[in-house]
Length: 208
Image (cartoon, rainbow, N blue to C red; front, side, top):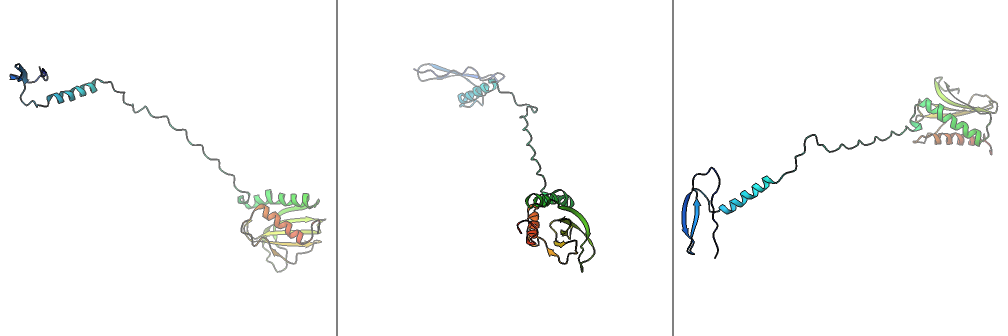
């Protein structure tokens, strides 16, 4: 024979409950403490209360303090700046430090011109019928001055228009030609190559 649960009290500081006797149907009286407004679902509420009390008694992990920050990531390494291309250097610097040495090396070591003199000067174009304004020019001379070529830059830029002239035995050049006129991409190697082509076309180099 089962026994009904006996609820002896609900909470402290509650108003005094009233005692009632009920017949259990089994010959025994059931003693219940009754409180006004107490719902029949008391056992489930007690379970909830017990659960909440268990939650309150369970120690919780301490909350993170504002100062407990994650370690800062190491800053990304800055990419090294690429050096400028030779052709992007200032005009005079490019001609004097790169173009002249490259032409001299090729003509001396590959073409055997052992008395080559090459310079960068600003002077008028010494041709009849051409204006007397001065322009920067690369001038190459060899064979005791018997052979000379001039590359004239009409602007202070390797990408601007350029003309080519040549002369023998110190004579005044009689004609001028466009130099690299069809090339859109101007590089040091191409400029040296065009000088070689012009000189070979005049049969001034070995093997001609």
